[in-house]
Amino acid sequence: MSVFKAREWWGTKIGDDEELDGACFAVGNVDNEDSGASKLVVGSFSGFLRIYRPSQKEFRAEDLKVEQQMGAPILQVEIGIFGSHSQKELQLAVLHPRRLVTYTVQAVPTEEGGSDTFFQLSLLNKHSLNRSAFNFTYGGFGGAKGKDLIAVQSLDGEITIIEQDKISFSVFLPDFLVPGPLCYVPYPNDVFVTVNSQFDCQAFKYSVLGSMSSGTIAADDDKAKENKRARAEWTVCLGESAGQICAAKHTPGLKASQYDIIIMGEHTLFWLKEGGGIRTQKRLDFNPVAILPYTTGTSEQQNLLVATDQGHLMVYGSGLQLLWAASLDLPPIALGIANAPSIKGLVASVGGAGQLSLTYMGTDPPTQVVNASEKKALNYEQMDEEHRQLLTV
Image (cartoon, rainbow, N blue to C red; front, side):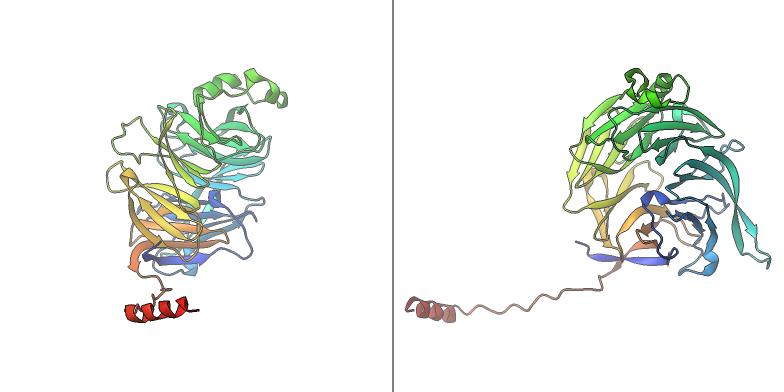
């Protein structure tokens, strides 16, 4: 499929015999560095949290700024405005099975002095969860400005809303069997989108969740009470399970309040309207493992990165046009866009065994090339002679 091979600018491997999934990876300026250089945050099920700051081509030991054992498996990490002291500074949120913790990340000079630094994690807020967590999403719920609220989904279908230093309320989802991916579509849509075990994509409005819960924490017996469970704003049957959901502006001509809800299914990509209904879909000849919308230039128009289980990376533009395709050394489980000090727009990826890399879409040909055999001119007289011999047999 790929004509070119992506060039690795920087790469390393985290730990030994550690496992993680795509939610354990985040890219952003988590320490609020003036230059805006991206940091790579990686968690693992072993409980280790690592933060890298790639500064130049090839990995150096100084690029690892934090390596800390958090005392519990890490299910997800995200970078957002989770503190109350600033409406611009970013913080780090870490999800464990029974707690959600937010930290501020600060660069601290080393004892040797010079330009080398390490990162220090300072506890911001710690929230204990009543039920085992699965994943979370974040955003300006209810039109909040200058801060990100967090919605944690539990293994048994409870959505818990956390606003910085307090837990606001919780509510159970309907028709729930196993948890699925969770995404927040920004205000004024203000909905949470997920896909349940019946292959239905459902959207739940934040204001409705708040009114259904009466601003309280859900009790165990609320699961069986219909008037205590969340009510979907709309439902769309996809016909297959989903691995990832994201809100983007991929379709040309979308208004400020309009979004594409892009869902990565087992063999299909779905583009849903923000109010429900399928805008378009694309059946794939491969198995997708990760998607990432990203902005090009100053326009709000976004392209879509799609990674496959065979290690291919494809870029889709408007109209589902394939703009570029390249092959990676290993199939990724998560993608990001990183800005290094000397180069911007690198593709950050992490593999299932912890292979971390920054690549760019170069024009190196693949290292393994299959040479076609040389064609020979057809001898029709010889073919006719062989045919006559076969007729006499």
